[in-house]
Length: 450
Image 1 (cartoon, helix red, strand yellow):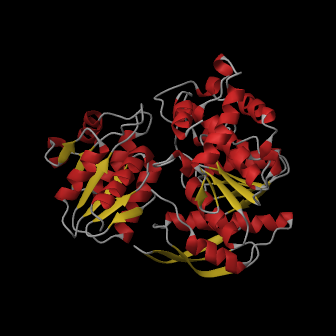
Image 2 (image 1 turned 30 degrees about the vertical axis):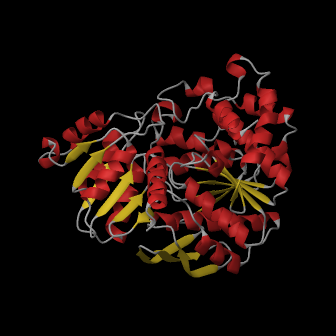
Image 3 (image 1 turned 180 degrees about the vertical axis):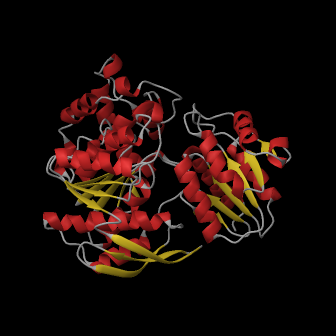
């Protein structure tokens, strides 16, 4: 199997990340990934793991946890989704992405098995990617694997692992057509990763979500460690170089930690990651304070308040619901100094478009609307404009400050042409849009190095 063959194979599978709508309850079945893993020898059972679910910040929390464990001298795997540019980004060990050769070799093995599955039993794109991660991590003989949940938690393909610690990052309204229309139902699905007698670290939550998490922990006799109660934190400084903060942990205090990820919300994610690695002590695994400090400082996570260019600022952020858009808006106001903000916005049909617009429009001086070229569920720019017209009166309603584009490349190019050195361009609304913008900027640098 060549790499092109591998991409064709994966693209032939049903990919719920890109679909507009589907029946979640009928489509997500753990039986498929369990059977596929069984036929592969259950490779997930040979690796100590950490499992992270949530609405906001689960990728960042996973990346920070991964960085701390690496700094402690362990060989660590990280499995995340979606990718921004290359499929290989989803699976990495100690900062090395899975190679094309390993990916092709292992997918060839997986394909021979999935070809025997028929109809509704055929594994999805995400299930095959997850099986690939299980195989690769097992083969690499790693010390730990950090898994980010794809969607929900209870029925997610990552949920056949038996983690040492699981974590739930802040929960807000997301995928309400699939996970439920209340925070209770959404949190219940996320809390489905909590195993009997396990340890769960939770970020601060709305009361409704926390009640649901506590109920699951009680039913499963799991210990709950709550950030904001058992672990506390204090932000000291925040700027375009990152944040400085202190954490009062389960076992000790960590003073003046430095994190390069931008925004106050990343302090919450870092405190949750510290809770995760401290909780490993309950499994007789001790992570030193120096490793925690070094891991926090070295953590990286693309597409989340990522500065892709300065003078003018070009910032990429994957905010794709009302809550994450509110977080992005606060971070922009707090961290950056600029004259005018040009908002490049593209969203998916199944998202709370109005909620996203309500949070981001107040910080924008002009808006360039676009759509992803790879996501079937990408909303047409003209439809986003209609929502803007309903939300904001005045200049935006009249359309004077709104431009419609047909591609992310066109939108980013136009934004950079309009922006002056003291302005800011914010690209957001979808990780698919952010990935295409990041790819555009990388190609731009190759053509004309900065």
